[in-house]
Amino acid sequence: MLRSRVRALRHGVLATAIVLVVCFVVALLSWLSYSSDRDLLSSMTSRSLGDVVSYSDGAVEVRWPSGSARVPYENGDRVVGKQAQVAFDPADPSRAVIPGADLLLETDRALGGVTFAAAVALLVVFAGAVRLLLAVRSSRAAAETVSVRRIRLQSGLMVRSWLEIDGPVERWLPVYYDPALVTLPSPVDVSLRGGRVAVVDGVTLYPSGRAVVKHPRGRRVDNPARPDPETRAPRGLLVQLRVDAVFLVPAPIVGLFWAYVDGSGFTGWITATVVAGALGLWWGAFRGSDPS
Picture 1 (tube, rainbow, N blue to C red):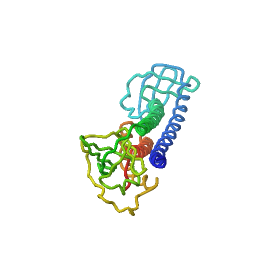
Picture 2: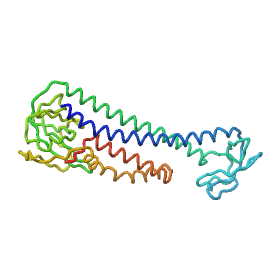
Picture 3: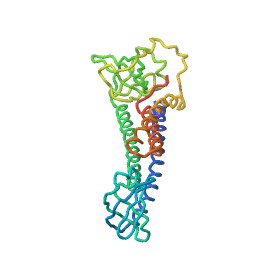
Picture 4: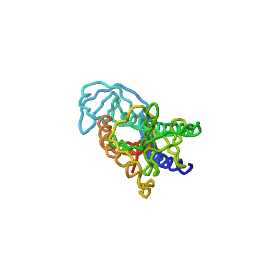
């Protein structure tokens, strides 16, 4: 039973660790960028009302009574001819910003990167902790003997194992993959604890979601009534990660969409792609992907 629990945990812990490492790197780089931009902005203590007189090479020319500066400003042609509040460094008036300047956007974007990475990390840890606590609590509940059949369902990119539970109300319970599932007869009697944790022949099968009373969607494959006991079931984290790699496919598209919406360019695309890829691996582990 302990071995089954460790096997079920390793995959989730590894996927969670990947997400946390990626989030830490993103948060660190974003914080360094934010700190640098914040220090630069903190030196601009003087204020004045200026005129935006021209735009070229990605920067606007701003003039005010005591000085002038070229301020990086994306699509600055739309503010030419307008007045704007100018913040500048009294010791070096060429260092200045106006509302909407690239420096302000980059500072906000960097701070958002820190917040986003922290939020993702907390969400992943919280979801994993809740799933673990529910499984542990169910494993200590009273047991009932039920007849089940193991099925595999493919829905989109996800392939999962389910236990089809007979009874007055037929139920389907998703479970984390265990090699014992490959040679599980159909049907077979199992000890079901708390309606969520199944024990058969000393092997504990932990739930990868809640039980449902409506047949889950997907292409169904049933276990044979008497599987060959010599069948070699896939084992190990490498096999599991190889299956989860399919969730990396959408990551570049997600990154492209994020870069377009956020306007962060190539850097934003790389960052969002890496985060989306890590979350894809975690999602496969959290939902209980089946490599068999």
